[in-house]
Length: 167
Image (cartoon, rainbow, N blue to C red; front, top):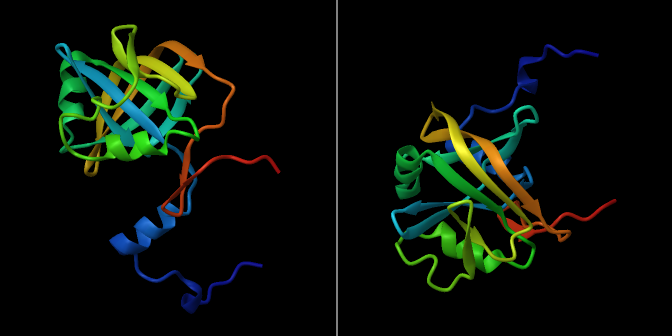
């Protein structure tokens, strides 16, 4: 039965209310990577999703203030590393600001992009389109290479790291 009682409406939307609602959504923890010349760069992101099968595409949201965004805009390429359940330390390292995020990380080059060792999923992408959405840019990438390991991914839910468990 449909109710039209105005008192049944949600309270007004605030930034805190929106942030709390989004914290209730389980997301994969991913690190987006790119090269700035010879130097690898990366940042942890929570907004990543599959977009298309034909052609294979994903989307990822990068903060407008992100140094990595400028590199992706210039190079038109990015790597996407969905971290494994054992890589919460890397998630925190790449979430911080600063140039030395790769100093303690094990990584290699794959399709000309920095690839983190041990990630559950690896995607090499070329930028198809960049679209502004509020305080982020959504990078839509065509996947040119994909690899995965049969391990549990790292997830983020209610501001805590975890992983998926089948019912």
